[in-house]
Image 1 (cartoon, rainbow, N blue to C red):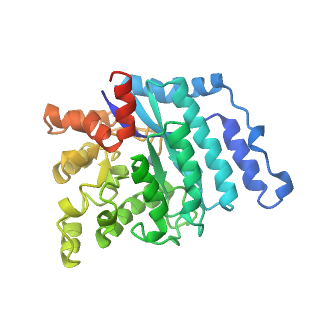
Image 2: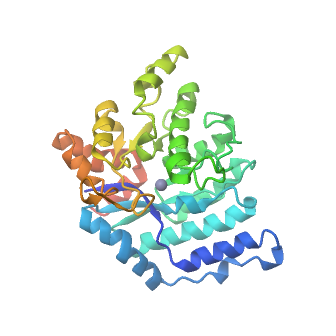
Image 3: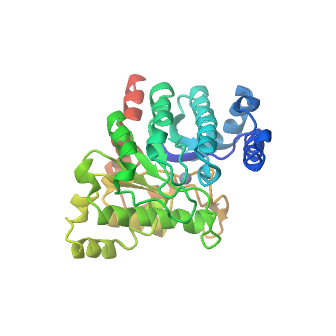
Length: 341
Ligand SMILES: [Zn+2]
């Protein structure tokens, strides 16, 4: 089985974006605020947007199942207040739930949280639990910077975040550390802010001792781990300066990297530097980079090609495609087993 652990509903019907635009406009004039019930999207519309896009490409490229979360750049936690994010997260999560219901063989949900800058993450717990218990979601996306590029929240190792971690451990779900739109002009959203955040998360985790408090907590660092695998020597050296254990022990029982680096040398480096047990197959398709690479003639985000061409054994490929995902997402594993897979 080939499990793509990183997909977003980037192709949702236009009416979703229109509803969000009205919600954002209403921040200046609350009388204009749209009700959640005013957004009407039929199952046929959902089916069409998936069949024409994600599912078509999954089938063409050979992926069986995608862990599917709301469009990351649209989370925009910096917009409005907690209520704004709560209404928006509920709508977006419900759509992913409906997609997973319509295509249970091919999609499993992961939740966006109703984060808001300066608001206690405890407020996210109700939506998290609804998504796990009622929707059967198998993971969450956790935004380490709900300010959208100003980094006003404490590091991920701070007790500030513990209410989320306690629920992750209780429900046995991992979090993908995933920022949203940058509202700082210095940081391009997907080219700089995303990669910065991935790298920043790894360094925060090196500086702290979070996994002593939560030995079973699991984070997926997307986009190939940002710059971390490329600079692994720097991070090993910094950990040493900080008198931390070796990174194998300090981080690699708890953090995992996906394969969204979009070229062969990047995957070759990732799979040489990072143990295969910590690498999970993903494409983030249909996402930030949608073009065709003129050097290969293939889509940049057709990431299975790179795994196929990497110097890996059949067992290592199995780990990357399926085995690691089942271990990191135990609820997905349980759901698959319940269906004889
Ligand atoms: Zn993403």
